[in-house]
Length: 251
Image (cartoon, rainbow, N blue to C red; front, top):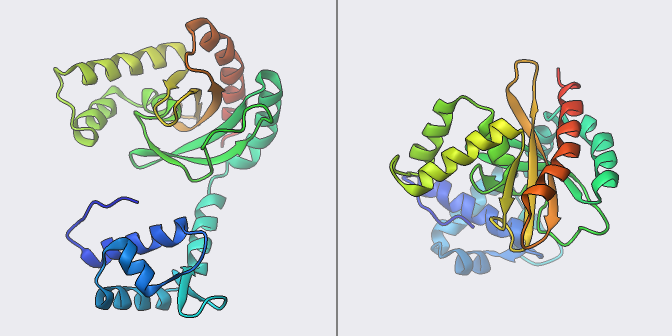
């Protein structure tokens, strides 16, 4: 859970409670919620009642005075998911790609300064990764994020590195990421190695709309401690082809 506080405590408390309930495998009582989040009981009671009113939280009939995620969360999630018009076209392309390279395939879209996994096709030989629908990562953490960012104007690279990551222009991290984005744009694919999970490498290629703007990225997860440049080139041929096919279906 993200524990960073803002100047709106009620919102902070609401997010903490929703994060906790979403992660829990069973409904939680108010005392359990307050104990796990550190929210004062009186404050927790007020916030829970507000969340109940807006159907973001629901009372669970299976456990006395306990709470779970409410129906409105699912309505909001479903609405956002259904707006991703590229998803239906992704599945048949991803199935072919999975059978070609025998790796799990993921579709990610940019949301603000993050990328979010919105769809996936698992390979039976490549299913031990903690990549799930809804997984959210920074552009710099994921191959998909780098692939998307690299296709944006360079001014947006600098803004992300300086404002979002707070990197100094003369620093090694700043120069390294700029160099990686330039390389990604030149080659047409991005890589990541162990940033999101140890022993997992990812390759990603951007999906473009008719204005050549990146709207998504197709990724493949590769189980290996090291991904050689030759292996990356070999896999990338299939990913680039799949991304082009998906791009051609985007209106």
